[in-house]
Length: 200
Image (cartoon, rainbow, N blue to C red; front, side):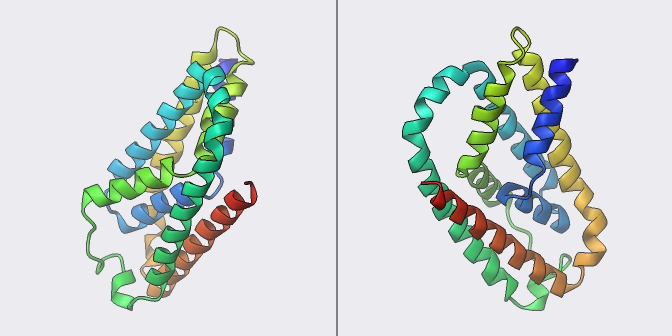
């Protein structure tokens, strides 16, 4: 249980911070749009990276120095683009920002954006593959149990965020609140992109 609880707590501490992926899940939850698919995609993606880190940390650690600059550039470029899109959305008409009036986005473009926000962000690799992978070595023989705890944290967080967002829906029925959210998402995306570029 010690390995499992450590994996659970460490997974939650890393994932709870606001980021591009979390902001996207929150937005989908507020819209009540493909919430199950988005939460499941995020949780399964995190789980795959967690298990990659735990089961193959030594090899991945060797590859990271060569991959990190390319990952940072690609991630920063995507986040800047997505931030621009969110900021433009903040200035759209009121009707486009009201949950009940907004046109539903097809599932596949939503999932494509979700996957891009997940895998184009170098931080997700540093958090899941590198950090959790290295921490799991502190539990020799119980690395898989540690990974199960961290995986549980991802599922708990993404499903709580996605489906819990509906309780905030009355607040975001106000178009001004949607504009503020879209603007905040844009600023978060740009801030993360700047931090990625500074790390180069």
